[in-house]
Image 1 (cartoon, rainbow, N blue to C red):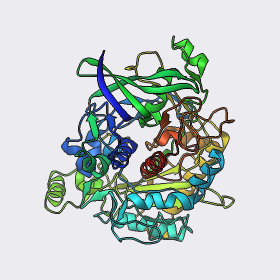
Image 2 (spheres, rainbow, N blue to C red):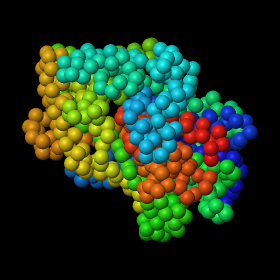
Image 3 (tube, rainbow, N blue to C red):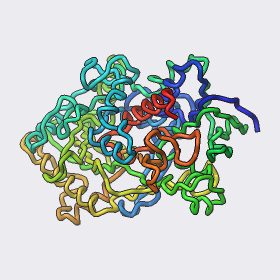
Image 4 (cartoon, rainbow, N blue to C red):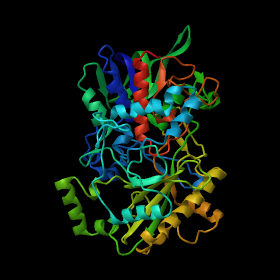
Length: 541
């Protein structure tokens, strides 16, 4: 086995958090960093054209091609579970939506971690640090950072009508969904630069790649972490990985930072002997640290897609299913980087409450001027729009567990969607609320007709059943290495993201979230990496 060298820090995964870590840590020219990525370079054209996510998800060049186990809550269906396998990770294939969540999300984190540095007023400056908002610096937004935030370059009458209908239903209009004001609707802001996707590889890694203290290796599959016994107990010394048909080890003198995501990080920990001891022994893996929480606490936003056929208003269905319409769409993007090819997967957002008793919004809408049976299928040939609604704070919990000791075998992903009565009740309420919005005067003039799941579902039980038929992931898995206090039996990392009971090892990605954020999860993951880098550089190891 060959040596790939000795470093101060090894980062496993050049995804959303790994690119930020590499940038921030290598600003200190006195440290050298190795960044390992299983995928390849982000030089595939369709990564950078916003609508290209349709070509990237399900493509082995850019996606790990994970699937969930058959899910009882979804009537036995197995779902695709896209995770980016390329520089930039899931920021190279995601929906580009810039969302932070609500302030109370981070107050909950701080309580669970026993660490006030996670409170909203402490993490807001971290969001602003990396942000380059199109309106410039303000109390809520940053300017001059790497993470560009822009308005979308499109307009649809059907989306404007949905927003008016939401207002008529009691959901106010907002100018900024990231202002922490809770309930309301607005067009999503996106991580693009003049109609072109901005991923973390371009934003954070490219500027750092010229630094002599950063080594980037792609096509490198990490098989396991390496350890040594110290007077303080077990400590991580580096990693073993393969690349180009050869096997390597690399040594980290200060820390190894796992940034492989909510699926990859718990998988690597378990393969390395960190996890539930009985589960590891079942696969012939000697336990290094018995941490029952590794792989548990999986949370995701389940979107309930409702499709409505309309009349008298244009939608993408009718434009994109005609050859001349497709030509004009391509021409508009080629000339102006605008129009449907610049679209994020969802354009209009809204936050609402599933019941008056909710003190804060617990539902998020992603509204689109198009419809299809399922992701990857062709658009319907009739004019329609889709209103997807998800439960922001699900109580269902799943898990990610290795299926064998083979590091190349995909892990078993079991989300357990709709496995609690509270989640089924919220799902039924969400479908009812969507129907009320669509029946409001602003939309009624387009004579909307429910196509999916269909008006035959009416009772509480029928609507919960329908949710299992139409529900699908919106690609926000988190929580599988969650942070918590030392006495918390399911905590994997502490408030500074250090793995409990193992020295010189941190997890820095969406897996550390104890609770999922109230909204899209990519930019909160950037904030997590900002905070971890700040802690590391401040010597708080």
